[in-house]
Image (cartoon, rainbow, N blue to C red; front, top):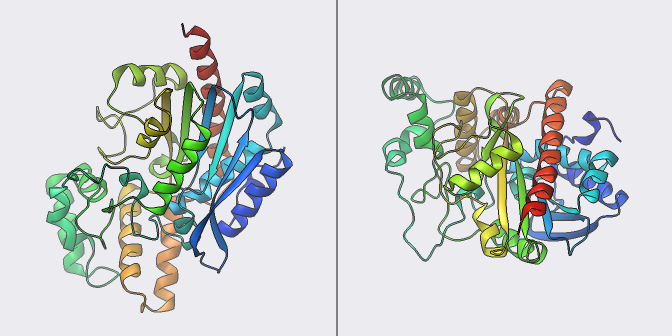
Length: 367
């Protein structure tokens, strides 16, 4: 067992080393899917996978990190700690549950301290059938220029317009308009893309390889940026299916929230990543959550994202301004204190234990 703080890393490159070393020490089966671009410091980027358990197991738990790049600072720490946690590993093994750790779904964003992929795509808005018409976010059209002003920090007029919008329409309306996902503004925020990203395609490839035999699949996807600091909201990560949501609440408690009934801090979203599991393992019963840890107030998080998006469009920005924007973004998605890390690991560990119990119980009761 390692200490909780030592499981976390100050950069993607160091996080990857920690993960691969932990996976090797645990004698897991490791596979790396190399990314086509280099990292911030010229390092190799990859979506790394470690399977702990029998590849033929019918019970599979997926634990994934860095769907939203910079959020990997948190998720990677959870994964590294879990791979060093003998009690946890014995729990899964004794229940016949194979655990698939997917490290850095979006390694580009993780390394470059961005939430988006190299295509400027929000990966968790990118899982659509692109042969069909894409959703239209009319609310984003209304605020597109307001969200990304010509200068950063925003001038007084822009700040006043944002305050007025929130005062008149409400913070939830602003959050939904900004974060709901859009497919019309390639340089905008929460862009869902017009085609599958590298991360989308790579995830589908590995799910097809690792989940094809499973009869029961659980998925805990680690996120940050919404809710009270250090509190892990358990957001149902699946379709609008009352029976499946009820099953998730049996496993993880009545506090499991849903974007479909307004109980979640998240806005209603489309193109979500969990849809890929149904394509890869249509035979499996699926139960999943996004474990979403709070950091800063929502307006601060959204403003940090606005600044980072402005910076992506203005690479000529002075180094001091660029550094402050990146520092603000990192703080919005990662609270670098031992207390916060302790909350993160303890809640993730509990959720993982509960997932194993749920998989075992549901498998045992299956006809």
